[in-house]
Amino acid sequence: MKQQNNRPSAVIWDMGGILYRFFTEVLVEKGAIKGWPLDKLPLGPTGLIPDPHYLALDRGEIKEPEYVKRLVKEFSRQGIDYLPYEDVELAPPPLRAETWKLVEKIRNAGLRQMLLTNDATVWLGERWWETWPHIHLFDGVVDVKNVVVPKSSPEPYLACLEKLDVRPDDCIFIDDMHVNCSGAEAVGMSSYWFDISAPEAAAAELGARLEL
Image (cartoon, rainbow, N blue to C red; front, side, top):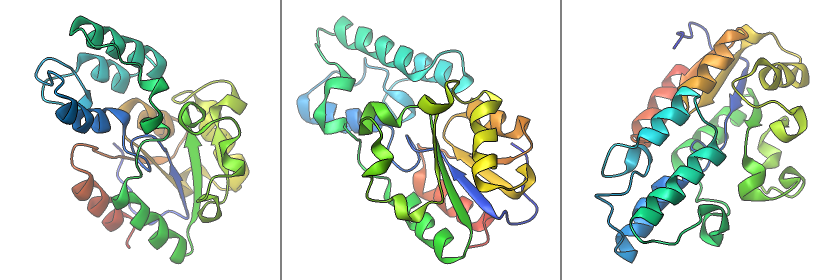
């Protein structure tokens, strides 16, 4: 991804996988308790075996609803009746502590922050931002339900720029999907790919890049 030479004035955050743990991370832990055959279930980058469906998601070949459908089929092959979108323990998944420390530091440093999400409504409910307890830390929200087209199309990133009233090169976009980082770079932003398989190291590297 493109390197950032100067500290940006605005940070645009993805949510799922970044501010919240990606749901397959939680399923690995849940499966260990339930006795699921984790050596046969592809569960994202923190699972025990490679997950070709996650790689397709990361490349932008499929969207999350299709990814979830494929996981449901994988569960079914192992004789497990499980539907992630109906699991109340995943609505939403747990917060990722490492990135929330950065959110606070960024706010205290006087940088602006924005949320850009493709699918938060699935986990948080309709118009989630109206009652979301962390909204005071951010300067705005772009939920693609209101933009119609998802990341990595240009429109969601441009909507963020319009709300923030900043130039693309004043922004850094943070996401756990390479395809979405590439989408941000296509409109002139810098990006940071957050490795959810090593969140502490990723958060530390991001903090250094933001000069915090």
